[in-house]
Image (cartoon, rainbow, N blue to C red; front, side, top):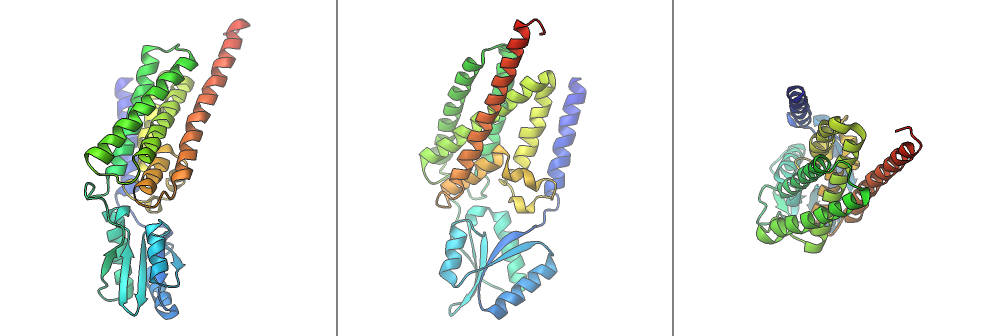
Length: 311
């Protein structure tokens, strides 16, 4: 069983990550344009010919409106043409891979070299834009290990005590990771309190989800939780590439999984004026409360069955 389980998890991991990232291409990637109708139409046609269904276009009246859209995470890049010339505005905070691919595609669509201006660069301590992904991945892994070790050490622990230990773990995780990423390495700018909140909620949601899967599936809960949280959750988090670069069968998970919500919330808190922060907090809280509610119901049903002699 250990050989089969390990082989299955490893195979799923390799298959999912290669399917998602071996040759990523955009699907309905938002792109901004602030230019004349003629230039905008020509650019849209060129991009659509290069990648059908690859982009969704948003028109803006001027360069300032386009810049605001980029810095508030409405679009990761925008083509601007005005009296100062043609240029591409990008948010470096989206990550080098995203920015590079979009800048290259838009320059090719224009048909001549176009200067690229980064209007929202990454923090000095995060030159590759991967700190959000690493922070989220580490917290999800810690939440998974916390749930597994808790159930192995105390499988019959009362839910109230389990929740108390889970809250202690979540608070400690939020504080520790925020201090490391925000204060020690300056990898996540923004509000320390908001980063602590999002990280703590991710730890809570991950531990609660893994605990519920262990409660539902018993020994099989560990590989199931590995696939759901560590593989599917982190692959669709958007920490490596945006959800618009995921294959169609994976991208829907990016709107509901805890790692994806945390990545959106952390990026919003760090760079994009808290955009997506409220939605991330709601999603993570809903995961935690929902999983614990289901565990409570399962425990009550098991208790009643035991009391009536059907256990």
